Length: 334
Ligand code: 5GP
Ligand code: MN
Image (tube, rainbow, N blue to C red; front, side):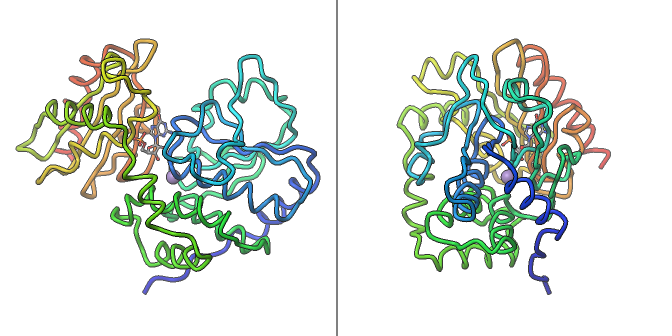
């Protein structure tokens, strides 16, 4: 039997009420790249807090734009992008779906150190930063936590809040297909759908609106897949020049690790993504009990047991060779 998801701790709810009640101007943010859970949780939380505090300045601000596929969400156009030399006038920061504060670049430097941070997250590797935190590693998505938070705060749940929260849930569970898909996840989905939102519209925008050049890039990534350990370890890579060649913005190309991951027999998949500054971003996925978050944390990253990542210094080919050798050994020893 699976118990219903517990509400957030009363101390957290009271602390959040106090901080939001006392603040003049609150920012809700997440780090790049912005995925569906990040954007959906931000917009859903904004809607919930605005309903409780009409007239108070509660803004979504990120270091980059909301990806095209999520722009259909109400409020997405209003989300601010941190401009160069922008010093946001805010006295509260709420982070959602951010396992680690190190992943924020400029925003934290632009805010006074005295600004309290509220940390709402579902990464087990989250160290519990901030003045107040609620971390639930059992939550399928932060969007599902925001739904429980809305209930605890006594906020009305309308379609405007439900739509982004549903996007958070559907993207972070791989359309209800990953191991984080449990009864409470479907219970949350049911509650969100009861507000009258249209799941087919969500799928159309989020999963069936790829720019054609992205399909070409995906084809190239598929052709580059390589295997080790009898086909149980698979990986591929994306280079900076690929985006230029296909006329794509790199933020449009998310979830490419699903390509090696979706091959029959694959247990651990990796994607190596060349990034600016002579670095490579490594995405890891596991289809077994092999804990990729543990591997990623040891490399300075983090994530969930079956989906994690980190950034490594070095040429992408070198990072690839070294990480695959280490992964093969780690899987062997597990
Ligand atoms: P992705 O591979 O899709 O970028 O990330 C998979 C999961 O691992 C996400 O939950 C993401 O937040 C986490 N993750 C990815 N890269 C990093 C990283 O460099 N540091 C931390 N702490 N978490 C990461
Ligand atoms: Mn998430």
